[in-house]
Length: 117
Image 1 (cartoon, rainbow, N blue to C red):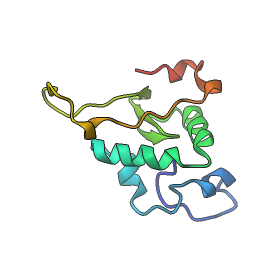
Image 2 (tube, helix red, strand yellow; image 1 turned 90 degrees about the horizontal axis):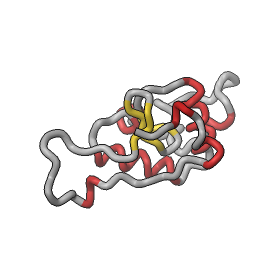
Image 3 (cartoon, rainbow, N blue to C red; image 1 turned 180 degrees about the horizontal axis):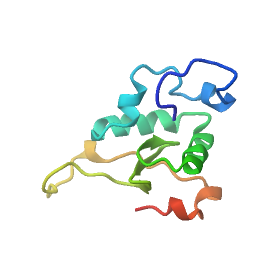
Image 4 (cartoon, helix red, strand yellow; image 1 turned 135 degrees about the vertical axis):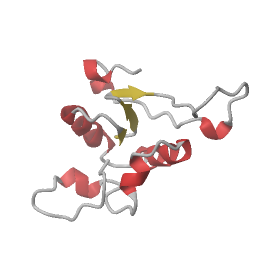
């Protein structure tokens, strides 16, 4: 995930230029939102991204704390599979509260910083 629109320069790694979010207006707000519908939208964009694995690997190397990176939701440096609305949990979960599940690539599942919360 690229946090904002990044101009193509020599310093920009090739994979970032190929990211599905590279030229997406408002990417920072979308990929760092607390709103469930925006988190779901960001994860869906990642699901179709040709460089999703490279993005996740880079986020893990940089020890990213927050946001959607490589299709995964980072909260306080941990990957979380589900996030719920504020307040008391509903007795009947809303379908729109279900976040898309994007599998972590197998070669990254053993990393200690990737232990899901």
